[in-house]
Length: 274
Image 1 (tube, rainbow, N blue to C red):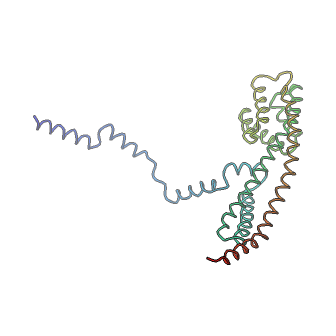
Image 2 (image 1 turned 90 degrees about the vertical axis):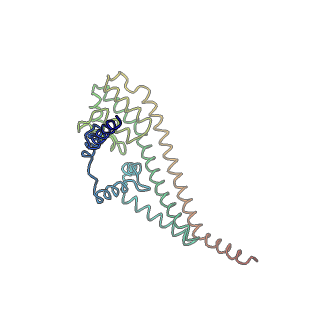
Image 3 (image 1 turned 60 degrees about the vertical axis):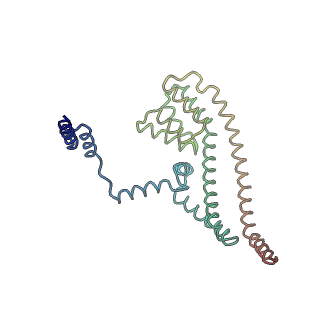
């Protein structure tokens, strides 16, 4: 009896081992369908492409900000190298060599902060002009134009920087992009609450109907925000002059007084008895 059981078990084991079971057939099919491994050159090229798009200090946020303020990656990198190099030389030459890397990082951080501030100013200017956009759209909608027609016709009456973004919106519509998707792309480029409120109202009007008084109290709110944002831009411009003056004064102090104070400290320490 045991011999029969052993022979039967051996036959089942050989049958499964031969690759005729369902599990073995599935595994063999997966192995056949598996894509062949990419050559090392292809893997290296893919890694270089991914690294080039995400090296420190240059990511998707930086690319979007550069595109909106009219900057280029080459000029942005050159500014980082020049300013970072100057700060590194000042700190390394005047104070100590080990401060040079920190100086380069500080200089690169200054350029990144300046770019972000330029982008924030651009967003503020676009938002401040939305009240003019609402006035133009309201007049055309009350004249009987459809929402897409009004969007297309107001572009020529706008001024930069909102005019550039509006032209991109019109180009999307002319290319056959659905109205809601084109509006969504516009809101992605200008991430601001008041802008989103205006654009979402346009989507609602296009999907349902235009009321007798388009935008309602939103037009008055945007008119008040326009005045506030203009005052804010004026104060920011004057504040940046103060910041630049302070940075220049700090660099001058580090360049002139830093070596003197460091030399006095070294001479004092070296003259002290052990």
